[in-house]
Image 1 (cartoon, helix red, strand yellow):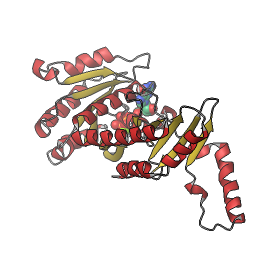
Image 2 (cartoon, rainbow, N blue to C red; image 1 turned 90 degrees about the vertical axis):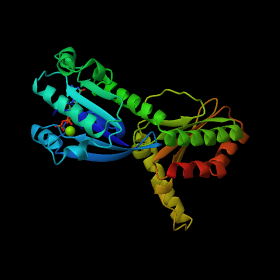
Image 3 (tube, rainbow, N blue to C red; image 1 turned 180 degrees about the vertical axis):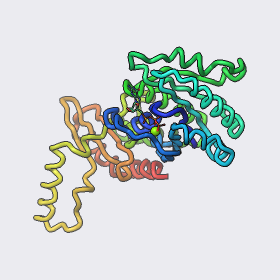
Image 4 (cartoon, rainbow, N blue to C red; image 1 turned 120 degrees about the vertical axis):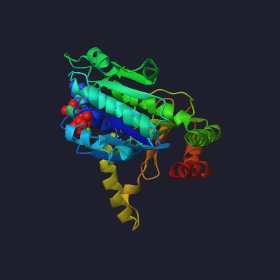
Length: 316
Ligand SMILES: Nc1nc2c(ncn2[C@@H]2O[C@H](COP(=O)(O)OP(=O)(O)OP(=O)(O)O)[C@@H](O)[C@H]2O)c(=O)[nH]1
Ligand SMILES: [Mg+2]
């Protein structure tokens, strides 16, 4: 799936991409340099849909190049989702020309695109003028074409832009029968785990931290940040101790890098967190009580056939 992220310089396109698809926080992208030409990146969105994001640097020299005869087809063909982004803190008449060119070539080379998303970014700024930017962009566009345009005022800094992008991509997932099949299969496997172990399961995608599926059906949570697997002080001590113990036991091929399951205990149950498939996803299991059988049931399940199936499904 080709996601085209287009718009004038400084709009926040690269910030949006990195914070949504890589789970970076805003502070980490505050000093981004302007993107030189097109930066193409592949992501596994929600662990089920492969995206190629075309982040088009918005400086004038590049825009001219994208619109040139030799490049326009490459940029604007085979687009699945088209997003235009502007910095609403500046109202620049030149942006209208960029927007009109974007629409023209998109309609020409990807006529099947039924919705075009326009993000009026940086509304967190005092001087943002999203209404003026809206008026500027929509001017002289026919009633017919306006129906396909969806304007949303957003802020990458405050998180609403990421929320909107996730909403747009989820809408694409629903249109893709392949993605829906995959998610159906994963849900089925989680339900299988649940019925065998009296526990609830939540499966997260690591790069973006988003939920892939859970045994709760609809479940809303903020994207996870996977800090504990990297830098929890308890874990880093554990790695060291584990290596010493293994050498005492003369186990030569034991690597602490393969440690992959964390277990937490509360008054009422256990939470087991297991990395899957080289850390591309994380499975969380929450037991309903503290019976030893329930605990060992989950442990068995996480090493058994259902888990293997789940792992294989994620791999393909
Ligand atoms: N206040 C505020 N600043 C933002 C927001 N989004 C992005 N920025 C800042 O705007 C600047 C430009 O962001 P980029 O993501 O590099 O913009 P871009 O659209 O990729 O720019 P080009 O690559 O030149 O086309 C950075 O300093 C960001 O920190 C926002 O929502 N609010
Ligand atoms: Mg950029």
